[in-house]
Length: 61
Image 1 (cartoon, helix red, strand yellow):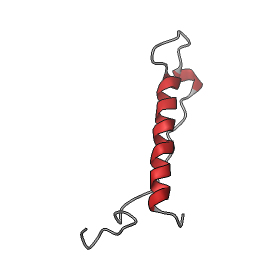
Image 2 (tube, helix red, strand yellow; image 1 turned 30 degrees about the horizontal axis):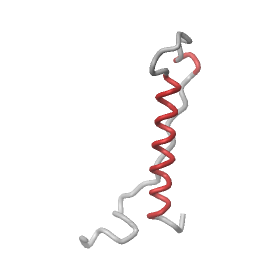
Image 3 (tube, one colour; image 1 turned 45 degrees about the vertical axis):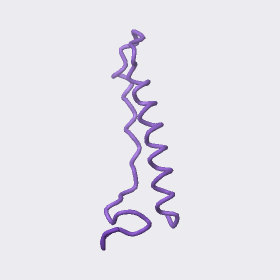
Image 4 (cartoon, one colour; image 1 turned 120 degrees about the vertical axis):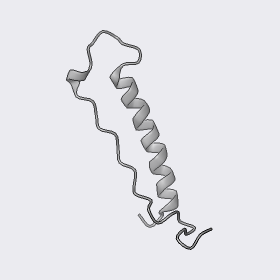
């Protein structure tokens, strides 16, 4: 472990931010695969996982 790292994680470890929700006008309504909402759901799942890992590194938050 370097001098700048701590057991809680590296010093530059910002809290993950949720993905922006798609604007309803971004969906064409044609049942695309993947739909913009499918992609958004995947991004939300990734965000939740990243947030859980971040909270484990930052229990004080």
